[in-house]
Structures are given as C-alpha cells and as structure tokens.
Length: 164
Image (cartoon, rainbow, N blue to C red; front, side, top):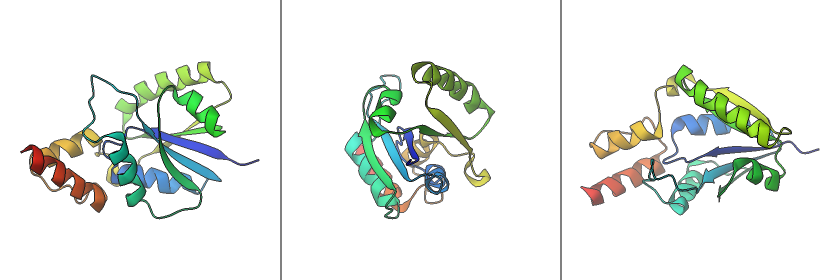
C-alpha cells in the first residue's frame, strides 16, 4: 500500500518554513502532493494568483520523484480522497496556531474519519515566519532573502516594484 499525503496551503508565498516541512515530510511518504488552495477568501485576498504560486513552489523545490505540486478547489477532504491520500500534513509554529488547527482537525475528521492529520512542529529558525509577515516586509522594501527561496524573493520584488 502506498503512503500518500497532501500538504495543503495557500502558500502566498511559500516560505523557507514551508520548504522545511515539505522536505521533512517528503521522506515519510511514497507520494506527497503540495496542494495550493485556489478557493477565494474575501477576507484574505491573494498577492499571487494560483498559477504563480504553483510555479514558484515548483521552482523552489528540488526535483523529486515523490513530490508533486498542483492546485485544488473545494473541500480539502474531498481533494485528499480524489488523490488517494490517507494523510494530511500541517505545520504548527506557535501555540496560537494550535486552536485553529485543532478546530480544523475535528471538522476534517467528521467529514472523513479515515484521514490522519499529521502535524510538524516548525524548525525553530522558522517559527517567526508567516506569508503575511513576508509580504509586509517586501511591501515596505525590506530584505526577505533569509525567509523565502530566491525565486520567491525575485517575484516579491517584481510585484512590489510594480505596485509602488
């Protein structure tokens, strides 16, 4: 039986913390799908469109036979079932993440009790990172090179130099 996992997120943009979780979880599964959420959220508009986010992730990751990147719409549990995944990967940075993740865990288990949700504690060097903070730093002209892959840094510079 193949061990298949899905690592969902908006990845707007992907950070070095996300990359760390992808690398660590990739060793545990026969197949890992990085699932870029394409559901619109009016409370949290995306800086990058779905195609841009998928492309940045593909360029940021080293080629791997067991990792794929694609977008999805709709319920995560439905997407995971379509992919044949029995595992969902999630990251936790701080205690503040736990309450939201716990609610999502309970709901996802109600929707599909067969799914196992596996949480990775962030590597300490990335615990302060979030895509929102990265975007704010870039918007204000700060250096993001220690926080995101170089392809993302370049795209942030392009995005905010156009919008300046």
